[in-house]
Length: 382
Image (cartoon, rainbow, N blue to C red):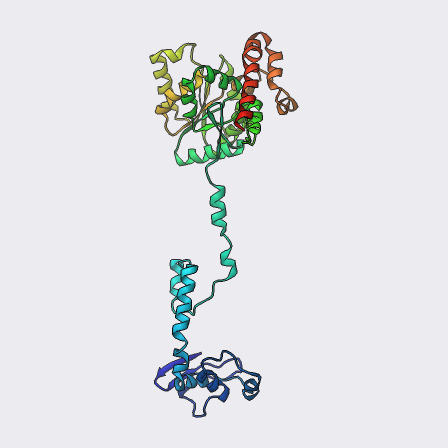
């Protein structure tokens, strides 16, 4: 290392050849001839074999400094070209601004040529692409979110921690049929923060139209998984609706599966409560007092969605879910189809066999023809 103390005076730190630190006047002996010749002839950018032979030893920093003082024009002549090259490089590929903690260390350092690795996209850019909002698949006017069950639960728990509420709708074939008959309900369903496909025909239709949904998300499955996530996060759950006794029995089952679960309350209003302002006000007061993080509204479509829209103003930081008859299945009162029947999309046939008198009109007379209409519309859309 060479430090200039005064004109013609230098201080030298020993190089790899192993010398001591010296201070004083510049060396009397002239620099090595090849070095002088190299600096004087500015067009040369290398030393020939003859020059290397003459330079039997490595020149010291003091000798190089003395040569620079003898031929300053040789270096200054190349300065404009070097600055021009740097300006052109900066215009083509702008350098990334250094971080505040790195600016002090980089000040005064020599110019460094950008490395090829700088052309590779950073991981932060790749992750920002993966964090984009999920796409939505239109099915008969309903915009169904292209998400998995885990993505839904993770988003809900993160929102609860941030104090942000929302609403999840679980449309199935019967819901889409009712919406097609009552178009005013379309706006109601699309108000939900998430709309997940609770029915294999919706998955089949999304594939036929070339916009496949990742998986089916049932109300029962979402009840179990989201309740488990809420128990781990310390969030509370309020069970609203169902047949008499279903909410209490479901709360006991969920509590047994998740000992840390906080049940904020259980309530089963009398039929017709949604038409009575006093009963709706009572439910709103009950929710405000309990302050739950999750509210399971189980009244069937579209009643449960209307109740959610009316009650959300009382708890803007809570998440409401329309889960239909999920409480009856969770409680064990209504047996659920085996897994293999669910996987092939025939759970409706299982339920029809369990309750033929109640479900025959709905499944066979109304929903089955609509399934063919849904699939045909998906083919046309594709």
